[in-house]
Image (cartoon, rainbow, N blue to C red; front, side):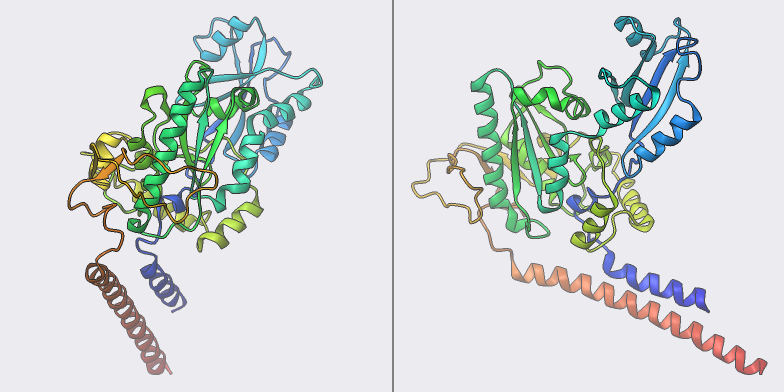
Length: 411
């Protein structure tokens, strides 16, 4: 009987959970707890023992708790056909620490002079992989941010200014798009400019974004949740308002939206996410993103990616499906409207930017949604939820009656 009541409670609780998440919400769900590997690599015999002793392995597990990083060891002959071996040979070293992810080339850690013992090396390497001013700043703002656009600047001031103009135009478009999103934007979209002088201290962050090549500048990335990317990193001429507003709109979309969601499952930046942040996230979001039930539900949603969809949040694919807008020439509006929640210090954008396709559900022109359509949609959802709850309640009552009847007959 207890099992029946427990199942009934879980089922009733699951009914209002349907379609409750946005992409931003599930950005706080950690789907890749071991996305990054910090490896002590050495040639066999070079260190007089294993690359990683059991004591260091245990310490590594402790240091990497509540992160998406794990520690490993690698021993091989110099002739080994492995990326670590090639990198050690090129550097003229017998051993070193490397940070790796399956889709990126390993990144070598240059040991500081004070790390003279194995434990000191391990602590220094873990700190290098996980700690930086940029990622600490993100962690502090993540729960109060809708999304943040990182502008990784280059040496060309004109190119940097052009990238910033596209970012500002995309944020203005998001202001116009906001009333059509499934949920009101409770938090601002931020802009973070990362100048060339700051990039030396952000090596790991840039590497994890695929920007280890210093020539790939300027670049823009849209981050949300636990420092997850909302689509591909845009570099140079690819930094366009259309692509940026597509990524921003997808962050605010329902996680059940009919689009390619493979990019949603991509890993976060290497990041510490302590228990305090988990508690704050659960309070802020209204659900526990660390719950196994939530993780399983998000995996189920992401597994439903349609095989016919292609691209990774590109304007040519997802934007046409989800947003339904196109780029076209617009005449100059003599009295452009100022968005109600424009970011401090930003100037009005030129109106020669995005315009929605005619009859589009995501129209910028019509700010007030159709009340009849909205009422009908919500009424359908409410009817479905009430019907499901009643059926489950009746099943529970029937099970209770059968159990009572059985006990009475036995007595």
